[in-house]
Figure 1 (cartoon, rainbow, N blue to C red):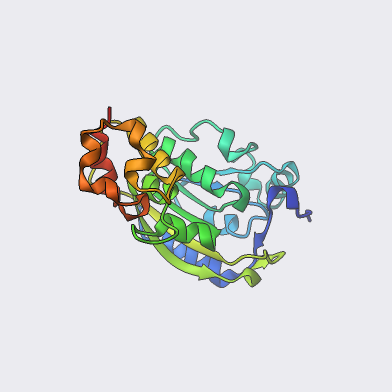
Figure 2: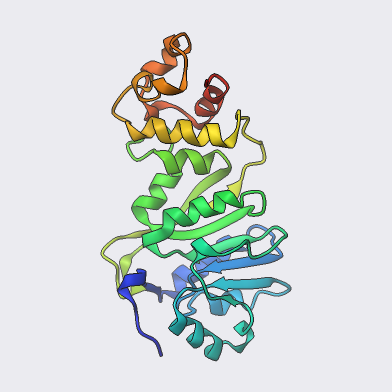
Length: 250
């Protein structure tokens, strides 16, 4: 078989009921190309490779798992990218869906990588540590609303699908999990530039206990900072409000 590597944050899904719920969610949106992140022991992969008329690739860093998957599922022989997802080139030139029981130690970085490819990735279905899943899906006013919430929701509609017990994994992680779906927004967010937007959001939440006036004062003129919106804290601003503010930046 294979060994589990704590250094890679490996907790492999074993609950077929959970796997079926993920598959059902995946099938709700049409796709022609699919990328699985972190197939591990292949619990989800064995169902994904049965999908008809789909171009499929899996991204797996662990050489032992790559060898195991190729032996167990010969169809995967030339479909596995043996690298960290964070280091790969874009796997398809045409649009593709991303799915996976994401390694929890790099799950937020995976989402930022997806943002780099947002024009090519219309849908993401991912399993995350529950706190991370909730953070990505949270709205303004929530204590867990933060940088990842705003940056993802600027380009994707986020739906929290369901909780997953730690008993659904081998070995059981110490945390609960959650599955979320990202669907690219049909309306394009109007920002001065993606870079301005990223800088503003990250600067605002970097000092989230301060008012916006104090947290982002270096990005705006004193005149602009007199607007009442700057009396709020970052967690009170909606994605659209952050977007609108980019046009007032220096």
